[in-house]
Image (cartoon, rainbow, N blue to C red; front, side, top):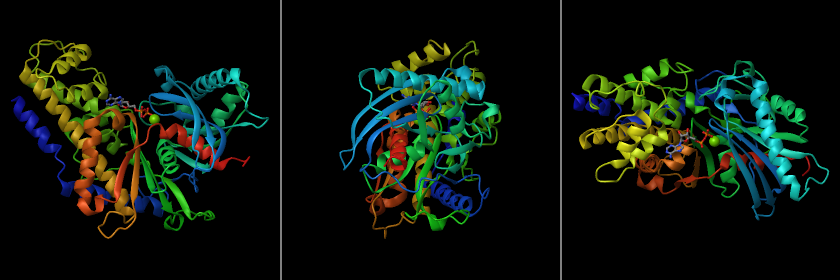
Length: 456
Ligand code: ADP
Ligand code: MG
């Protein structure tokens, strides 16, 4: 009985190469449709207004603020110029109190500004380095934003665990700027970007061949460099560089080729944003643990794999988190001791047999492997759109990837990389590299602030 449920899941989550190429082709088609006209695709393909990426020659002190889905980080970088790169950096990470994720806009931005003010005040104790210039800040805000310029943009909608109604439709830079003024903080927001754009910028600063930044963290997104004349929906003046970074917002991608199961459908319909962010719900850290929990619940209710247990915990949404399934999936002890521990700590399930623990590992494997393979298909879609997926390609293409899922879930990141090679074939994959960029999103914001700086 349990074997049957697992076998069904395995079959429904299967991602053979042919299916992944269908997904990649659908991604490339959606990219084209989204560039064609506003609203042309679920994949919004938003203009970032970043038309020049950092070169390594930027110089001076810059600040970055990174608001993702779980934490936010403030940082300060000292850029040496002339390829000396980052001479010094300091950062601080702060967990976002959960109640602020669904409160009011002014509470959230007030909290952020006050933490930023504390960081700046601590920094200033030793040395005052602002030289009478206003401090410049790059703001990484990783939710869909319709940009109006490099340093302004209105929130399209919240994703992940955020839901603050009065912020939707508002300019998030204006909100931050107001909150900073209330704190008496003398800082100018020079650039508004998201984590994917930041990761692209942070990696490009060191390597010219970086063409895209991709995030697999709480959520997922991608940004890449597009030719400005390949964006029919763009009505403004073409930039001198001829390039424009596109913020894909690919988390909202959907294709009938995606292997969606009954568990995914239930997760989606009970989520904060039903019908939206389907690709994100299959591939990102916020959801993988929750998918596994739903499968385990079915196995427990229908097949009693855990014996006669109280289901209160196993029925609690989001109680089993992706770091937990990662720990279980990587358990190499002969008797799967870590699996037993995690089940006990998180779900109060005790006395499991080795056989049952093996089933749990297999569920983690099915869910994480599907995620990683679909993630690789998304990357292949970008390469396909750019015509960089074939064996005749001459350019090297580097994809910069960041996010807690990619960074910490090594079976996920390895599978993503091997799947990409499998899809591209031996020859083409020699010219494609996947590179983990640590904290690109925070540094990237400071770097873009630097390349936009009015004091240059
Ligand atoms: P954000 O997306 O909020 O900017 P991160 O990039 O740090 O933040 O990603 C955080 C996410 O990464 C968490 O929500 C979690 O799903 C995932 N994650 C963190 N640690 C691990 C881990 N050890 N194993 C698997 N996933 C992890
Ligand atoms: Mg982040």
